[in-house]
Amino acid sequence: MPSSNTSPRHAARAPMALSCAAECALSLACARWALRRLSLSGADDSASWPAASPSSFAPVPRACRSALAAWQQGHDEAEQAPTPAPSRLCPPYRLSHDRARGEVVLAVRGLGLARLEDYRVLLDAGGPEPFAGGHAHRGLLRAAVWLLDREGPAIRRMVAEAGPAGCRLVFVGHSLGAGVAALAAVVAVRCWLERLGLRRGDVRCYAMAPPRCMSLGLAVEYADVVHSVVLQASLASQQHCCLFPLS
Image (cartoon, rainbow, N blue to C red; front, top):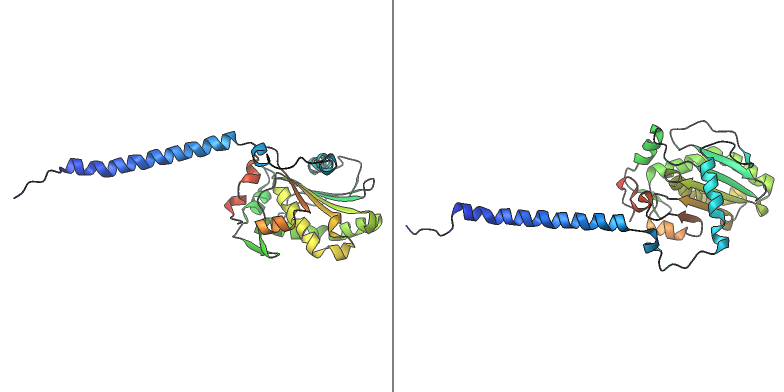
């Protein structure tokens, strides 16, 4: 009987070598990804963008103050609507009327780490929700629709007092609240302009470190309304909201 030159020990080395090579390749890929993430800067993404003019950036600090004021009632001198009761459908928010600037400001708080209702809104992804010819995060979209239905009468009253010709509707939010504010602004442009007597140019949203809450087509279509503000490499803005694919 002819003898074989390949021993069982030698035959077992080939799969082990392939397994070790695959582990090394995976480790190198993970190390490369981690290095790029740690060294990433927001300036890298916007290096080719034109610099913002002072007039276009001027509302941002004021919007940041409005987002902070949503955590503390009575933070500024703007006329403030009565504090709404907390709801499990939407993060806490603050509605105010800045008569000096002719702005009705609806500011939505960010994720409250100790507030379980915020996690329910965030985790209510459930797949892409069809919306305005694109898709949106289901929990954030439901929160936005609920918010406008809840505060619609108060917003209409404030706009009527200021006069539609000299009033702007401004949505502000941070993190989780930025996603709600952005979608609320889109809903307002699509469904509320006629009711309020406003034009598209009278509605603005300043979203601070927003999650990816809408599909790319919607983001481009409403880029003149929703202004995203991201400081350097914000984790919330770079990751899909609850691993929700919005391509």
